[in-house]
Structures are given as C-alpha cells and as structure tokens.
Length: 342
Length: 260
Ligand SMILES: Nc1ncnc2c1ncn2[C@@H]1O[C@H](COP(=O)(O)OP(=O)(O)OP(=O)(O)O)[C@@H](O)[C@H]1O
Ligand SMILES: [Mg+2]
View 1 (cartoon, rainbow over the protein chains, first blue to last red):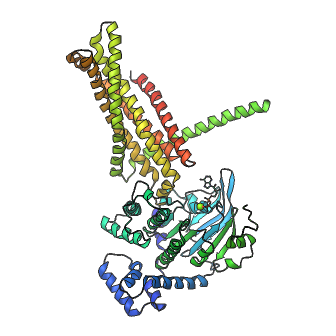
View 2: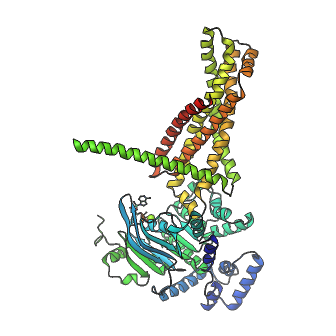
View 3: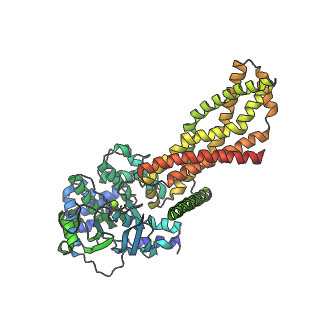
C-alpha cells in the first residue's frame, strides 16, 4: 500500500447529500432569495475561502436573515430528524472497526475482546463507567495504543500493519481532543490552534490567521488568543483544545469528554457547537461523554461499555428501551442496582 | 529458606534483565535520533531555540565554575610546584588541566545540572499531559520534532561552552598567579603558549562533543519515556542527572586513555 492510495481513499468521504444552505431553505428557515444573496456576499467577502458551505450560516446571521439561536435551532431540529431516521443495520462498512480487541494494561484486562464499529459520517457516543476503558478505546483508534490481541481497522487499513509513515498519513484524517486538552504549554492559545496548520500545510500566515480566528470565534474564545494554557480556566482550555481539533478540517473527529467539568450552559453550547460542526461538515464523530442522558439527543449511535465489554451498540433512539439493568442504572444514575459503588 | 534464596536470585535476574532491556531501548532511541538527523524536514528555528535554551541557561553557571576552577588550580598548583621550585610551570599546569580535563568535564556536569534536568522535566511533563501523544496524532513524529533539535543543540553548544570555560578558567588562573601571587604575566601566558599543543585542544573538544551527546541523549530519553504522573517526572529528572553525570565521568576516562 502506498501513501498515494491512502490519500485517495481519504477523499472518498467527501460530498454531502444536501448542502447546509439547501437544508435551511428546505426547512423554511430562510428563503431561496436570502440564501442567494448570502452566497453572493460571501463570494465577495471571502473570494479565497475554499468551501463556502462552512460560512453560509454565519453570513445569513450577519445579514440579519436569521438569528444565531434560530440558526442553531434549525440545525438541531434537522439533526433530530436525521437522528430519528437513523438505523444501525444499514450494512455499510464502518469507518473504524475494532475486532475482538483485547488490551491488557499492567496485568488488568481493560478491554475484553470487544467489537466496536463506528459508522461513517455519523455522530457516535461512547458511554460507560469511569475507568471503563473509554479513553483506551479512542487511543486504539489512532494507533496510540496497540491491541494485545485483535485488530483495529480504519477504512481498509489495518493499523497494526502500517509503516510509521503510512500510519502518519492515516492519522492526518483524524483530529483528537484529549481528555486533558493536551495544549502545548509553551505556546499561547493562538499558536496552539495554528500549530497543526503551520506544521501540516504550506498555507500563508494570513490564511492561517483567518482560519484560526474563525475557529476561536466558533468556540467563543475571541480575545483570548494571547493567553497561555496555564492562564485559562478548565472550560477555556477544553474549548481551545476543541478549536485545535476543528481547525484542520479532519475527516474523523475523536472527542474525549468535550464537556466534562464544564458548567451546564457551556456544556449545552458545546453540544450545539458539535452539532453545528457536524451539520456543516459531516465529519465522522466519536464523542466520549458522561453527560447521560443529554448526550443521546446529540448523537446517532450509542455504544455503552461496562467492564471491558460492549453492553449496547445501536441507535440513540433505542437505548432508552434497553432492558439491561446496568444500562438502566447508568441512565437513571441510581445508587441501587447491579453496579455497586458504595 | 530455600524458596527465599530462589526469590533473591530471581530478583537479581529480573533487575539485570530490566537493565539490559533499558540499555537496549536507550540505544534504539539513539539510533532513531541519529536517523532523524538526516531525514527532512529540517526545522532550523527549533534548533536555534534549543541552542539558545541550553546555551544561555548554562552560560552564567559555566563562567562562574570556570573562574573558580582556574583560581583554585593556580593556588594548588603554585603550592605544589613551589616545593620543587618550578613555579614557572604554573601556566601550563593550569591550562593543560583545564583544556584536557576540567573544561569539558565540568562544563558537561554543569550543563547536566542546569539544562539537562530542565530538558527531562519539560519532556516528562509533555509526556504525562499527553502533549507528545497529541503531536503523534497530528502526524508529526514527536522524536523528530522534540528530540532531534535538542540533541543537535547539545552537540553544537557543548564545544562552544567548553571553549568559554577554558578561556575563563585560564583567566581565573591568571588572576591568582599574577595578581595575587605576583608571578609575571609573561611567564604565565608564555608558558601556556609553548606547552599547549593542538592535540590537547582537540582532545578537549572531542570530549566536549561526546559529553554534549551524553547529556542530551540521556536527559531527553528519560523525559521522553516518563510515566506515572508528577512523581514520575521527578524520578526521571533525578535519574537523568545521576546517569548522565556518571556516564560523563566514565566516558572521560576512556577518551583520555585512548587519546593519551
Ligand atoms: N497508560 C496506561 N498504563 C496503564 N494503565 C492504564 C493506562 N491507561 C489507562 N489505564 C487503565 O485502563 C483503565 C481504563 O482507563 P481509561 O482512561 O480508558 O478510562 P475511561 O473510561 O476513559 O475513564 P474516565 O471516564 O474516568 O476518563 C483504567 O483502569 C486505567 O487505570
Ligand atoms: Mg477517559
């Protein structure tokens, strides 16, 4: 397998069924005319911007055709319709596939022969008890950890069989939000977000600047770009790290607890941001979350883990009906039940 | 009793194997770093930053060590040489000890203490906060990005620091010999000029380059493979400093014995 071939299959995932602007028109959020005008204004303002779809929502807001919250609501209701229509067994090949993966860490079987299939271009949530191996699973998906047994596939690539160079190519399709943010201490927020662009693209500094500022604005960190990571609150750090994950326009976005430790308003805002990003870009997203049951509204597919095994894997609309006592306890948060914590 | 003995032997064996493994890993690490020297891309700004970091950080402490090392050498040397009535050899005695031994060795030790420990701690923190993993996921080889410029900087900066040490050390000797003990400066410097050969300087420089490699290799290795949180960082920092100091002295002996 050559590097060329890897590049080619990464482009396979492009092309969404209905553009964002079309969706807004179809949902009656804006008129055909307004969309036309917004697209034209955008052409004038950002003649160099590659994919105009990313901007059209903002331009519509700027022109006053729709308010920011109405735009988000519109996107969310569109997302909800898709979510309800989602069926797990479509027979599509999953984009990431963990087959019979066993991982032993310090003598403990953290993953016990699990099978996980991440559907392409969908939002998947992974839930489970703290210490249940969720972060470990995410690290397997990008080859940061190797399975003790079993195999991990991304597209048609078997991660274990790739050379370091090929692995690096596959990794370019990913963005990873680490649980702790993993911002570089020696760089300020701006440089942190610009970092992957400076290292991986040959874009000019002004193009990079535009893109970084847009991402910072999206996560509501405008004006914070000169601060260093140790001067940020936990929530700001998470959002800066999220901006760094979004800036490279990845094909697959892995988010390890994007909302943990944040206040409910910011948590909600981040859920909207993720949904908004998904609707605009159709990335494949995998989100680890403790925000049960809210997270079920924001994802198509749910995977529930317990003691290194998969308890549930299916549409988020179906997990509520699960009869499994562990899942029921997890959703309700009861102290009584099969999971004994006290 | 019997099983205790077995246990004991087993422990020794396990420790021995662990150490062999660790050595193997260290040499593989060095090999990877050496390979990365010749693979593009070359990040010059990174290298300059590291040269600045290692050099500036160590400059003051090296100057301070050098001046006192030179002074004490002159004092001791004068005391010894005057017993045999050969005070005139003080200049060469000071200069040769500094250029051949003390310059490279003390510079190496000072750089270890000052910059090496900082290298380990910095990389260790990057490791435990998953920043190294973050680089990896971005498709940027962390070894090439983080380690290569640091080792290269060590190779470049150590000889420079050693030369600075040599000059300041000889001047320190001059302060004591000429200003304090009343020797003529012509005798002091003249003796140095006639006694120091190119070979002495080359020996000193070979040592300094080797020590630069040892310091950056050991310290980056220990930092890069840090585990177990904040305590792990402090452990790797300590062991990096101890190990590179010991290695410097061991290596010094072997280079001296080869070059004599
Ligand atoms: N590098 C490692 N070395 C040894 N053990 C590890 C390592 N990483 C994780 N573990 C162990 O694997 C188990 C699962 O860890 P993991 O971080 O995946 O949990 P998690 O499901 O993400 O929990 P949380 O929700 O609290 O983040 C834990 O028991 C942890 O101690
Ligand atoms: Mg985790």
